[in-house]
Length: 393
Ligand code: NDP
Ligand code: MG
Image 1: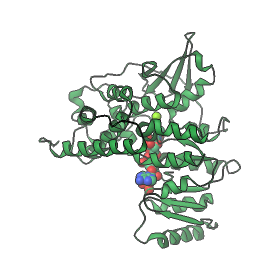
Image 2: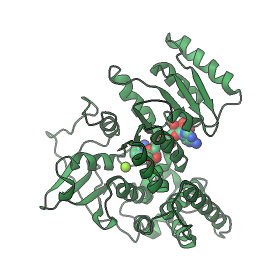
Image 3: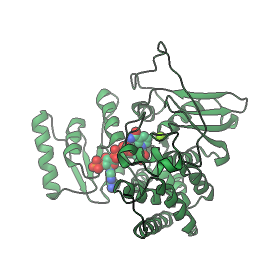
């Protein structure tokens, strides 16, 4: 799911490199018909789902498939085409060994649930599924005997490190953060940064939303909540450390004082391959570190005053229920507004704090209640943005 994005295309690179290991059943995209139809021909997929269909509908998708098939000299194997908002969820429920969810944003939640309800394991890049719907997602996995497998590099690192000890021996999880492009800046300096500057990540090449979230440390906040749900760890036992070189992707500290770190270059192909390998390591997934070259790795604590988004995530996570959904929804609206030049960078965290302050828990955590909390937080944040007096120059 989300085959045309940053994680999606890297996942298909792994598939093309390992044709004997993987067979693609289906692909989904938001609106990029040109690319997803080419991918369908190259992979031999049987089903396609497109969230925002082209003007010409299914006929236009069929034409694009036929054109790619002719140009590439490969057969068109697509039997079913689903179009519209529910299309991705329909595809996710097709029989398969595993669904990799690489959609961006809260909109990815229902696809995760559709796959789990079909009893299919989910390799989760769409961390928002767990942030927004944590208890609902865990319940769906448990009821259907399906697994959630991390794709996010930090959680893949933790899963790999956890192999070296028993659960009862784990003392804490240490999540590394690159610190993003604005590491070392003060709050006053951060008020002046531009969207273009936020999109230049020092170590990772990723989609727009997650790159912006890395700059604000919202991404690290989302990952702390993700780690809480994936590994069942208390927030008190999840620590974040800034490691600008992005070579250590996270660590597990054990009760005897030993810490196991997972090391590889910043390349998503490794965690994607580790997830799809289902415990097997796939040869050549990434280029390993070169230990013949001098290198310096550094570590420092997070500056919570300049980057309040991380402590706000701990606050939302500890409050539990629908609070993490509110944190994410407010952020999605604020990131869009930041890129439209309507709010300053520092207002992202301020707006998240305001949305958390305004939120009242709506009772039991169900799919309906998290979606309602998500919608209310979006409306609250949009109103707050509309009513502000001093938009950035
Ligand atoms: P991108 O923005 O690059 O890709 C997003 C994908 O989702 C595209 O295929 C897009 O389709 C699709 N999409 C968008 N809206 C919808 C929708 N409404 N319904 C169905 N599909 C939709 O994002 P990334 O690949 O960077 O990130 C994907 C997820 O993985 C995010 O949750 C992110 O946090 C997580 N992640 C990403 C990492 C990275 O290195 N990029 C690292 C770790 C986690 P279209 O192209 O047609 O718009
Ligand atoms: Mg990550």
